[in-house]
Length: 118
Image (cartoon, rainbow, N blue to C red; front, top):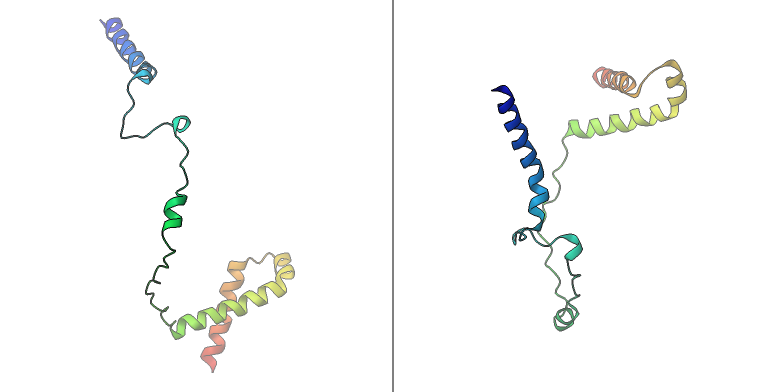
């Protein structure tokens, strides 16, 4: 009983595995398009381009960028200042084992403390 069942399962699996190889000689699906090796190169549409004068597309109406808040501008300034000081001291800081993330955290805390004192 088990041998018949397993041989049937094995036979079914073999048939399903062979199915793509058997179906390659069938009619191609018209919705899928042509295979790459059978495609014809597209002919340039020179006549149509010469007949129509160039039309310039109207520029799309774009909204101006929204103004950054005071905190966002302060963050930008802090990042620029901390980045510049990191680049200036990078070799010595790396020798101490300090990473950019740790340095940035300390630099921001120091800048915040200076702002709070004022």
